[in-house]
Image (cartoon, rainbow, N blue to C red; front, side, top):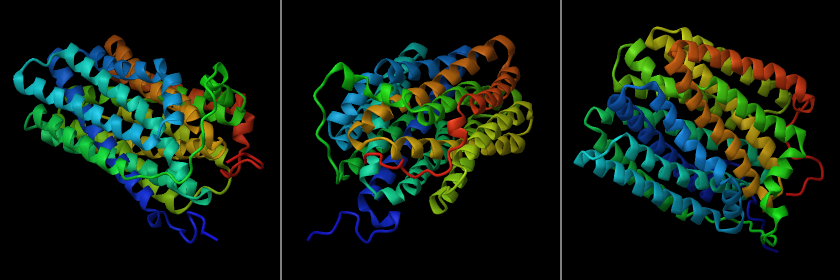
Amino acid sequence: MPKPPFASKSRLLDHRFFVLFWHARTFSNGAFMMQGVAIAWQIYELTDDPLDLGLVGLVQFFPVVVLSVLIGQVADRLDRHKVAGFCQVAKALAALALALGSANGWLGRDSMLALLFLSATARAFELPAMQALLPGLVPTVLLPRAIAASAGAQQTAVICGPSLGGLLYGLGPTLVYVVCTVVFIAASVLIGGVQVTRKDAPKPLSVETLFAGFSYILRRPVVFGAVSLDLFAVLLGGVTALLPIYARDILHTGPWALGFLRSAPAVGALTAAIVLARHAITGSAGKIMFAAVGAFGAASLLFALSTSIPMSFLALAIYGAADAVSVVIRLSLVQMRTPHDMLGRVMAVNSMFTGSSGSLGEFRAGVIAAWLGAVPSALIGGIGAIMVMLIWMCAFPQLRRVDSLAPETGAPR
């Protein structure tokens, strides 16, 4: 009798395809973050308008929301690793166009936003496909640790990407975009080597299957509460769009400091992800999630009031650690309670919520900063995130009472 595909493999490093997946995710996210630092600084240098930093977030918001139904179908009906690989190639082409435009002097605000839109569209298709790949790469018992390790890949990228992007920007934006192009291509090669051990035949296309991800989440208060909590907390408490303003106008530094600050949340998040990858949450998961969201809001307030680089870095590191704990719990609840054959559609809806929260949060922060200033924008966001946490504790008592991250009894896997 043949052995099960995951037999005698109790460590994440024993799963070769997971290791390839982890490196591909790290490369892809690192290049995207590196590109983000260059675009934000370059646009702010061109226009000197905080509202344009908000537009950077808004441009990335539209593909996730408008195409969410199509994205879910693609993730469930096509080979997910091929979808992810194609998206890496598309992002490489967009980065190459940014490099050529910077080198030849024709790159302006509108052309940068257009190319960012193309890159963000590819990323919108990539993320649910990558997230839906994960449960097929490791056994269920290792999934919470794999999710934490995957979150660690994201945070490793966010540490290295912005810092490297800020340093390379000193030699010119063209170099940043060329490096991004190469890294995206490397990520496409890595993800191309991944093979999924489980495949499910897609159900016939219908209105029901098109919107199955939405209906699945809405019918489950625990999943809906977790996803919507993340949406509104990050929408209000996000401060990423404000970092160029803080770096240049409040801390009076250059692009190196912007990369340093952009990496700070990832330092905290990576620390949290490493701990969670080694020691999975075994109890009081719902309460821990709410506490993490409260800490996220408090860290936003601390950052808002900071006038020094060390204090800003510390606040952002706490901000990132709190967000990482919330993300690991949310993804574990979603991925371990969703049937594998519709995981792509559910993760597309999840990405719509989380992607829109980050992008709209940047737009929100930029608009309020243009109206009231960067410090009031960050203060309002931090207070708002704490208020969301308190309201959701009352509105979703089922989420507050969640203890274990294990799959629901009898849930199909």
